[in-house]
Length: 265
Image (cartoon, rainbow, N blue to C red):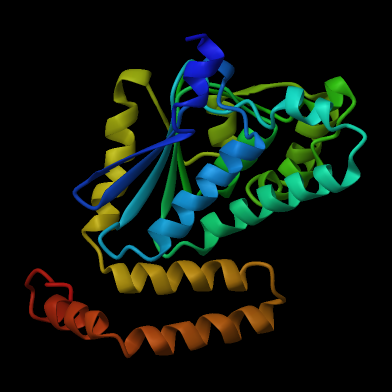
């Protein structure tokens, strides 16, 4: 069996669940886990499944191999270069997959151990949280090959400032993990040996809280963030009112006032 045949029989995404934390691992490490049409479909299927699984409290997005994700599959894209319908469908489905991550009730944490470029950088920016190894690098290098990173910019500019995003887009230069931290692309940077512990700090905090409260709050966060301030407050205020109607809110307040641990419903 050839290497290509072997790869064809491996899942694009490997799932592992432990104590309410689902880890989805991109499984084409030998090619830096490109977001091919098949990889996008595999991720979308996993996202759709976990959205309806209340046993999952947090999702970790990880990757095999030396890098996290090198973006779209350039060989596949080049093979369909003259097919505008195919190209539009690819970017539409990729965009839908990215939006689906923000619509999951569970928080999503990117575990970034290596390079995250183009759509791979977009993937990091779309996750709710991101923990990077100190050896990780990030780039929007499409301009170097004549393909401006327009869709990756959608996620990245919602994490970093406009000037920083345009710097990445216009130069194609990579930034290191400390710079990504300073610019707001990731939450924390740790030594490679401490990467899982860094992710675990967030998953432990998330799983210790009310799933209903977090799900409601995450949905409100993404609904209000792009709206004018008056609409944002209206959306957030309605969410707060609904949140107060939850049993977990009553329990949490009673536990705080009674100086005891909360028992979430």
